[in-house]
Structures are given as C-alpha cells and as structure tokens.
Length: 149
Ligand code: 4NP
Image (cartoon, rainbow, N blue to C red):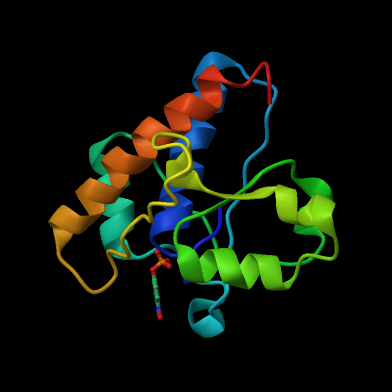
C-alpha cells in the first residue's frame, strides 16, 4: 500500500487488510510506505489513528518508511492511492514485470477507471471516514480474490 506521506491513506489500507488477513486466516502479507520523507519514521496522523480506532483497528505502532526498489521483488501487488503515487512508483520500476505489479487500489472496486483515494491530510475528520469506507471495500475485494492472486 503506497501513498505520499505514509501517515494517512496507506497505513489505513495496511491496517484494514492486516485485520482481514488475521480474521480470515489468509496466507498474505501487507505493508505500507510512501514517497515524501517529511514524516520519516513517524507514527500515522492522529486523525488516521482515531478513525481506525473507531473501527476497532489499531495502527498506532506503524512507522513511516519510504518506498524502496526491493519492494518490487518482495510484493506481488503494489496498490497506490493516486496518480502522483502511480508516477512515483513507476519511475522506480526496472522492467515490465515491476510495472505490472502497480495499480490504483480503487481499480479493485471500479475496474479500469483509475479513480484516486482523496488525500485527507488537509481536510477534516469526514475525509478520513470517507477514505476508510473506500479502502474497506477495496480490501474486501483483495480478500475475496485471495485464492487467485
Ligand atoms: P498521505 O497524506 O499521503 O495519505 O499519508 C499525506 C500526509 C502528509 C503529507 C502529504 C500527504 N505531507 O506532505 O506532509
């Protein structure tokens, strides 16, 4: 799960998928990272932590890390939140195989549309709740596809 700051959207996506992996006992691993080092090693934004806590998911221990080229080797799928993340990740791709791993997370719920998850950082609490619901639906689809992906 990749966004810009790795303190709002992608740690929320990671937390949601991690919770579902545990609940459904899926053989899957998830992590999240970003591209902007401003919050390097920080915990998630307090509003992201609170929104997730309201849904009984604890993401408070996560620490911001940057995307690294090795992520292409370790992960089968790299889900990005918006067009900037898409360009950032693809700029580090070494070959077609790396490129093919990258997709908009909302293409899971809206195939082929390249819709973005709005950045809630500069908005209010309702933005975080909206992000939660978008990512909840998308991560449900990852789990229901998990035997084939
Ligand atoms: P995120 O939101 O990409 O969803 O984690 C952001 C958080 C921080 C910044 C930008 C976006 N920032 O520039 O500090």
